Image (cartoon, rainbow, N blue to C red; front, side, top):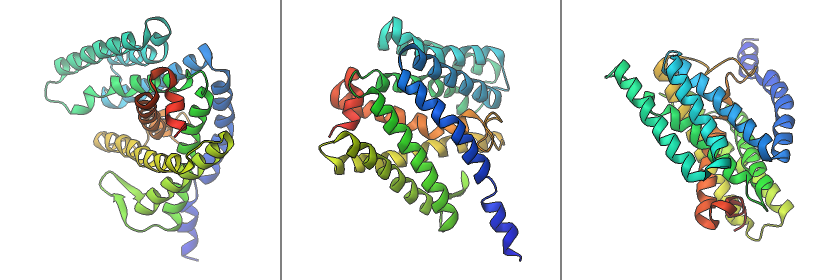
Length: 281
């Protein structure tokens, strides 16, 4: 009998997490399919919500910092439509400097987290836009990234709770295990296998290898967020999503994987064909 409460606690959040995912995933995929300005606006909204949570934790809800962070998120999602990618990056750079200057003026000896927020909420939107705007593989590349992250999260969750074992980074995230990391890599590879087979990708093995490596990036994104929250002594980044916490809690792995995937894709095939660059090997 003594094992039942512990077992119940281990899986206690599974139902609410599944219910939240069942509502959110179809809505997100519908927006990805529509593309265009609707996808840009969706990404901008996610970035603004991330900005609000980051500023609430790191900058104690400072209104100036929220304005600068939210502006960065909107620049990442919307400015490439008007002034191009380079113009958007320059604007984000200026906002980063202004945010850092304001933080230094308020508290010269504060932690380095104060300088990371604007890039954190601004660059992933650009990555998502770059992938989605690929004329041939935009939808497929975004679906690939999302499925890899969702599958990595799911298998990491089950592997960590069923297998357990040595901790991955106990000082940062006590619940993460090496078994969970292995589950994340397997889940990401399985998702990539499904997408690759559906598209007839010529070199599936290379895609699976990249997917497994991106799962490590996904776990790194989660640890980055966990380190920030642990430094500021908060459990969740927010309360917006039942069972998941805040937006940052939900998209920490996604923003890391999208950024890495866009960089890889752009390096291999150019900015305009970054989706093909991450998919076709």
